Length: 363
Image 1 (cartoon, rainbow, N blue to C red):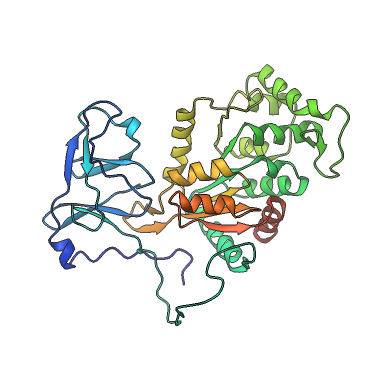
Image 2: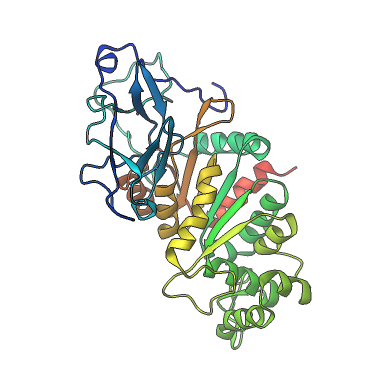
């Protein structure tokens, strides 16, 4: 099997699709308000029948958006972004009955192996072996380093350990990151580690608590706010290592989304939730693989922004890979329950995962 699975379009010669009506639209009655029978999207490939057997593939279908149709162009957008008069697709069926077809098995690979009606271990759990998941991840990352857009969604645990922090820096500096999404905490504690060698006052290698160490992250935030930016702080304080340093050095964009519980925050943190969502969505549009590591809320939020597929400039369609890495099954289950069923879970701690990844990709 190739690294990137091929895609099979629906069979539009099937009788129920040949007989499908043209998709219907209604104008939005007001800004941020959509017609009552609006079609809510999934993250699967969705097609609209424009008439005479022409089916239009929605280029960026994702969870809980509506479709605005303008001639032969369709855009998936959040209802809050809809403007009065936009032609919004209506219909609540998904198999062509109202000119809308949701295609759920375009990337399925045929298998000659017989599958019993009953078998053990059909669902990923903490007992699941992840060797194959790792191997597939290595291969996709190597491919997409040069041919895709790799997005990382990181929690602060990645910066709390010396080895995991070094490994993530190595991945960024060697081209395995094209965008990083996080919150105030990841950036704050990464910079704290650069300045004080601690994470929340604890040595990131020995785990010993430093005297007055609980001030370190607050002092870090204060130093950055005094200078007005992370970039200026890195330059003036001569910071030469870390995750954020690597992003700045390599010109990798990062989005820091604010939270109600943030200290500070750092100047680059986007405190307006919807502006942060819009900034994250720019990477959702580009992503070909997402690795969400040790952060529940950011993983679930970004998972809902990401389609399961990407239409390439040449018209080909490829899957968007989504890996969620956590010590518990909760995040993976929650993500699947919110519609991102294609997400692959690897259940382990942040340090073991990221160090293993770097050891297999470096060199």
